[in-house]
Length: 271
Image 1 (cartoon, one colour):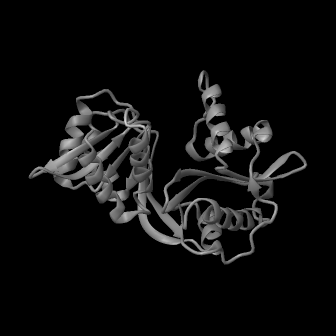
Image 2 (image 1 turned 90 degrees about the vertical axis):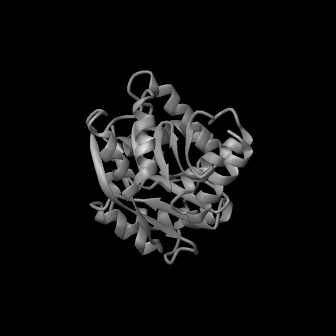
Image 3 (image 1 turned 45 degrees about the horizontal axis):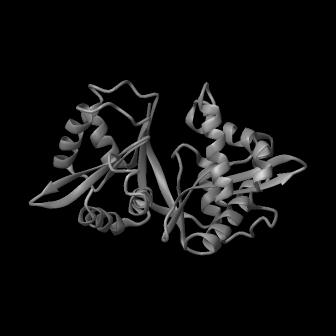
């Protein structure tokens, strides 16, 4: 991919730094590791100018697509082996491209049509939990069961089935080493955790928020998220975002009580 192409795509993505934080993160990686994403970003051009793009890796993520470009991208995707285990991004773009692909692609496990994308650009309006802090690598074995439980509860399948166990362990270790997991651990038990899944100089996107079921409703989530927001702003970027399922009213109430507000709406197709 040419440097001029990269600059054009980045200019498009930066028009909405919050909604496009995943794409911006991948573009930053491409700037530093140009061989790593060459085959994962495909562009749509009109009059010799890039108008939109898709990231086609473990996730399929559209960027600024319209009806015309989605048809072109769908045709391209149908001519190449499917890699993505999900389609995720702005709601109308995700559902628009899925409508074109669904006669040909496998039936999804689940379609989450409405996922509010929330953001906070100021300090939390609730007092942060002072015991929430970056996880340490020596706590990996304590954190792993919590990470597996969160992932299984959220996605519907375990991340450590078969040969993927070691790769998932390595992924969590990498997050810890980069100080991208915040946690509270009491007497060897994780009582709160959250991960930074995407990080740019403008926006950090939180994922993997988890409190043990027996402790939910006891302020661990609210105070933990307040601490996560404050720590993320301190160490990573001025804006923090996350997206949540519209039916998860408890989680939405927690996030909004901390100071998060709605920015846009995502959707996810899970295979």
